[in-house]
Length: 306
Image 1 (cartoon, rainbow, N blue to C red):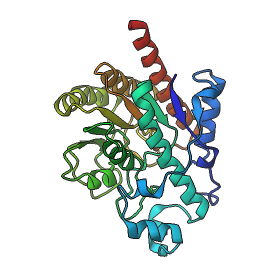
Image 2 (image 1 turned 90 degrees about the horizontal axis):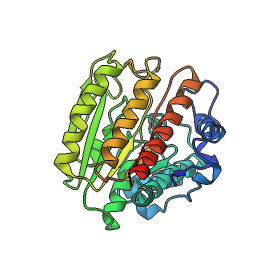
Image 3 (image 1 turned 30 degrees about the horizontal axis):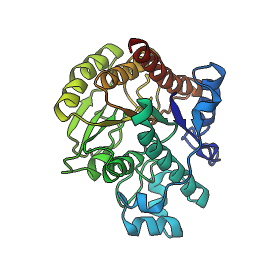
């Protein structure tokens, strides 16, 4: 059975007019259950991640400033979130959900952190709605725990995972595959193992052709023992922070391609849902639900074959 790591604390009230659609985490869970894509028993609530695990990626000084509430106003503004102890606990839960999803993926083949994708967090500062880098922490965790010796991060959010790329510069056991909008945030990109920059207006057909050619090559070259997949849905044609032109069906096919490509190679996948900023909240919810639906479909086909 597929495992979905989720907490009601993923949803916190934000100031009126804040652009981050935090309520989507509640709505996605609700829709997945109502449409019978998964049952309520598929959802598992994580506990906040241990600070020692955060230290695998984040500097002691940064963590001390976060937990003591001594960040500067500029640092807080850079994250895009108001500071509170509840927000820090939320971020610890999101990071824990990613670590748990990575552990679980070895049994279930595909597991989900039903939030996260916090790829703009660097080792010593947060940025753009990202405080702890959940994928970087999870990668370092599974390596340190001896579960694997090679991790690939496949980041298909419209924004480059600049924090992740920076953290793993010159780290041979982690391969970062970033495919993102060339003109999207961040303006200054970091260097990943693979960076594919897409021009504005890329369509479903163009996007899928590029991914179909590039992802298998990276997988077969590096031969990861687990993939951490950032499945952002801000590639939609109507997203306020992205400039690509994918449809819901295009995103569904993207997810199917990633899952089939990995499962056929017997590579477990831990997914984080990533960003989505369309004005129509229902489109964001539908897109995230489609990601889970495609994972379930791929796993069901795999079971039928065996």
